[in-house]
Amino acid sequence: MAKIIGGIGCTHVPAIGAAIDLGKTNEPYWKRVFEGFQRTKEIVAELKPDVIIEIYNDHGTAFSLQYIPTFSLGVAPEFKPADEGWGARPVPVVKGDPEFAWFIVESLILNEFDMTIINEMEVDHGLTVPLSLMFGQVKEWPCPVIPLCVNVVTFPPPTGKRCFALGRAIRKAVQEYPKDLRVLILGTGGMSHQIHGERCGLINKEFDTNFLDKISSDPASLAAIPHIEYIREAGAEGIETVMWLIMRGALDDKVDEIYRFYHVPASNTAVGNIVLENHVA
Amino acid sequence: MNKSEDYKDIPGTYLFDRTACAKGYHVNMFCMSLMKPENRQKFLADQKSYLDQYQLTEAQRQAILDRNWLRIIQEGGNIYYVSKLGATHGFSFEDMASSMSGATKENYRAMMLAGGRHIEGNRSKAEQAALAKEGKS
Image (tube, rainbow over all chains, first blue to last red; front, top):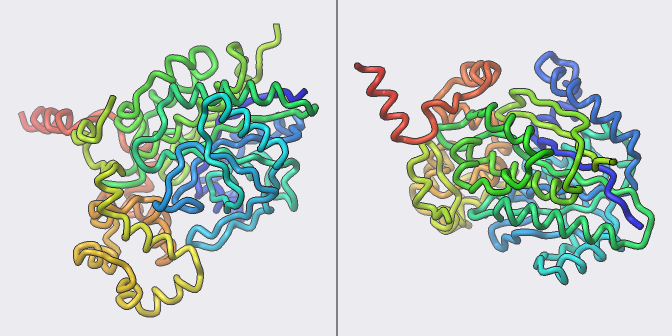
């Protein structure tokens, strides 16, 4: 049977990807960021996932305004890195797991989460930057990745409560999959940041710290945070943090916090990272 | 439930809601076309002719030609789409953010290194006004 071996919350700032791609990781500005992710990198290497389900948002890359799916899941055998206007990132093509992805999407739809099914998609920094942080510069990603996209660009995004419930439905789907797979859940995006308008550069360490504190112990209270509070307190683009609740919902009710890292800034954004594992009694 | 109107008292923020989505549809679709290198070349070679392909208002067109990032957002652009136009001209998210907030690149970076723009005083227009009044008295 497939088993969820852990959940990771992780920022996906594009400038972090650019720092890796352009060999700037040892510059003082970036060094602290990458040092902060070192432990997570080691934990992921120890966990040896067979497959990752990665929750992220497309940034007007694969989806335009023509159609805006709220929740969608990639069932393709592979996903190429997208050209977001500055050329595609020099990272490996992301290999999917069509059989497992179809199993999950069928299970989710039959459990009343009306997912959009994606047969062909290019993936942007939202998906590839966390993979670079977890695995560094590699020729091939060490395991398949199933992309789960959430609309957090056009209002309204799904609520925190709905995201949390989707995570629970993913947990059920994974547990019912007959193959022995070690599944890691990545929830990406956030933390506080605003990158449009005169209020650009907004950071709210208190909001972020509270979120990191409660995601292990009291996720239900985070799931109740309304959109307006994210926008007001964590910056307009800080709404991305709602996606971490999908990751959290996929874990057991009781989890242990294994590692946490928080740093300001990476470009315009507060960098957040947390590693959670199901509690073993 | 929060409707778009409830967000209006958040300062310096342009929610990408149904109104902005409709207003900026062609702006954003134009930006998205710049994901192809051949389109970036065509656009940079002759911006005005390239823009003729899209149903833009005069204000939108001018804002794009002026690389006025804040105005593009006010005209319905969404930052994730607009970033493709920025990248085409060699501007990063950080460059565009400093410009939109009216800071120099150096000052903006210094603000971020010092912990970012503070939440206190930036939650609502009312809070900003109250602080401004306090400052005067």
